[in-house]
Image 1 (cartoon, rainbow, N blue to C red):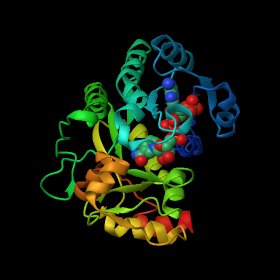
Image 2: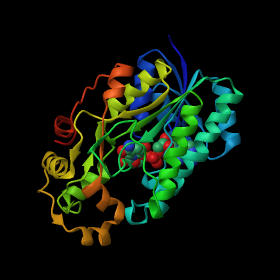
Image 3: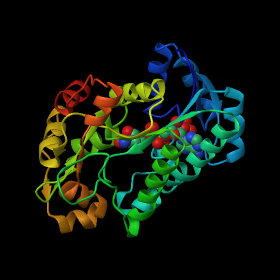
Image 4: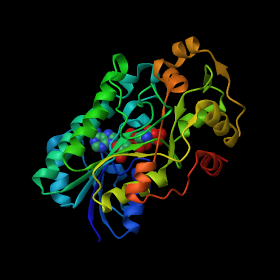
Length: 311
Ligand SMILES: NC(=O)c1ccc[n+]([C@@H]2O[C@H](COP(=O)([O-])OP(=O)(O)OC[C@H]3O[C@@H](n4cnc5c(N)ncnc54)[C@H](OP(=O)(O)O)[C@@H]3O)[C@@H](O)[C@H]2O)c1
């Protein structure tokens, strides 16, 4: 059945793939940006564009009230250069500060607007990248708890935890996207890999899960249409250690093999998060999303996906 869907953050790399899929399924989409200059892009994608600040409760309330949606999808982050400046993983807490607020306060504003306007379902982007519990098996399900973090990771972990808790409590779905790749999603990373400035750390033993933007978008459409509730890992079929995916990514991008650096040096150059991800990171299982949403991936593994996107 056709629905009215409100996509908060419809102009980002994810929104730009999600909005056309929703429109192609017959849904009427309202999509938001913080910049009036991007309203034309949203119209081209097939949505009604609206300017909204996700950190301003009044702005969110007005935008949702005007759209009168059946469902709200939260795709708001602030990771691009325009919102967060140059990527700075050494100061992860600073670099992610606005994204953390969008995940906590921004989600709260959307849920308040949903309640005020009788919107019964919310789907929100969560993360399954750096935040798997770093003990036990290498691949985590939704039943594995997210770790309590301290230091620089604490605020980011708490924001993700908050988003998941309030969305699921409200009867919605939190989608833990793996590392996104596809049009525009890994440009900064690939540039570094081409310059041999993205090395393998230690033995590259840490796992990661990837997912193509279009597969993450199709899972999101299913979650909306099925009124899904709960947490879902939205990742591809092949969680893999950095020692496998990074050389493949470099080869697909036509770059020389990545250099190797010891942990202590990487810690100085890139910060703790990068070292942790590359040596102790965990991957995620997509069994629940396949089973419960009937999700089928067009890009089951990053092996073929990187080749198609980066060659
Ligand atoms: N799971 C993952 O791997 C993952 C997840 C998310 C992002 N990323 C990566 O992060 C990089 C940047 O992503 P991106 O290009 O999508 O940009 P982004 O800066 O993260 O923006 C995403 C969306 O959030 C919106 N937004 C930002 N601040 C907002 C605010 N205060 N209120 C309401 N909406 C707000 C943006 O709108 P406007 O910019 O139009 O104002 C945009 O629609 C990409 O490389 C992407 O792959 C990765």
